[in-house]
Image (cartoon, rainbow, N blue to C red; front, side, top):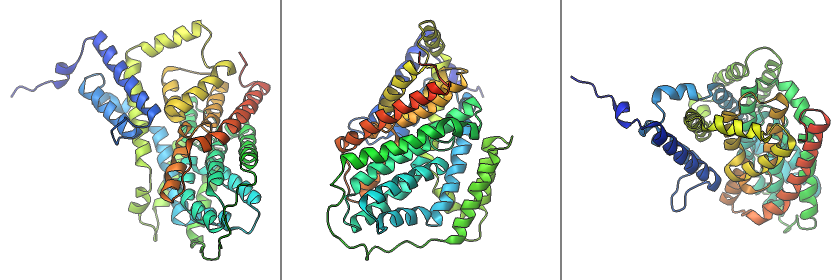
Length: 426
């Protein structure tokens, strides 16, 4: 029987391949910017997956090339951190934190400060998206039980999650990608980005407190009917021990992905928590999105267009290795296609960027995500989870706080990067 080579039938001529890949690539990142296509119930992950299928069907990329295109160490780190976070969630830690913060018998301003501190601190070690996903519902319940308007606290929750996550290599997905591409040291990264991240938390608190002053309270409801969730201290102790062990591993020569996977494996060995339940708490949509974006960017790279574009930018002095280029690029890209797709795309075409530029990219792209709701996945998660709890956080309401907190934190971050010699101004 004669075997049919499907790939030879669908392979296009080089000019046609370039046009085809460019068209699919443009449509994909337009979808990243919109979040969906009008009239269709398809989200960013669905858009990226369909785009990859189209590229495979058109012969622009082949199944044998997909494995080499995907940065598996990055996916392993994301997966492992999600398993660790699932351990905290199974212990009831996130719900306990959110409700404990919301129902504490303190002034609204103190509660706002505690919300910022807890969200920022947890996001630095447990990934911002996971933290806000878990904390938003119970925070809404507790705040409404206190007679407080949840909206300013939700803005603070998302803003602090983004700012706090900028401090470490595992605080958010884009930092994980940057750390893997640049082979960055965990503690050196924290030393380079920790201070601007902390200042970003201050900006979040001050901005929300000023803009919502006098409007934090909406009624006089009682919090006595809001019970605190049960906290499994044994499972929480296991999660905390695993976190300390992971941070210790980051100080050794062990590859980050191996350390994270070892911790994830240890979390799956349990007499009380089913591994199926733990694995079910992994954000598989995010992992699929990353895998598809890696493959789509690989297809574009094969056309030679990215190399030509980088060469042109280098000749024109427009590479993002200076603050004059990196800062506006981060703001624009993070608030159009999103900071995660923007970072994946940039690092796919910009080879061997300076270490200082990688610190700048991580810091500025993350802080820029606070500008608008669409700037980061954490913002979107807070808005959607709050809406499911009957709290509507509008675009304008968020922007009134998001714009000033972002501009202030970015200004300080740029001064820090320049003053420490990590990045030049021009």
